[in-house]
Length: 62
Image 1: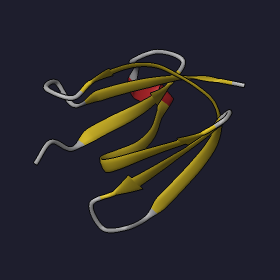
Image 2 (image 1 turned 180 degrees about the vertical axis):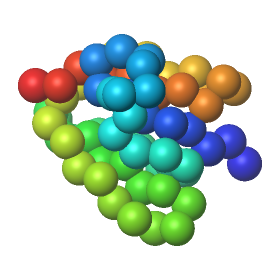
Image 3 (image 1 turned 90 degrees about the vertical axis):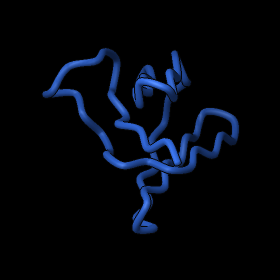
Image 4 (image 1 turned 90 degrees about the horizontal axis):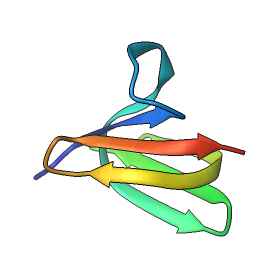
């Protein structure tokens, strides 16, 4: 199982939005990240990149 850390705008420690993300849902400009424990984080923006091997997801905030 690949778990990812989600970053807002760029990959930097201060931009972490969610950790241990196992699922990403996209509906229009709404991104929903669900972590391995089932905690949900919902943000407005667009997906910029997802490197699931490295466990890094970056989105651009709306």
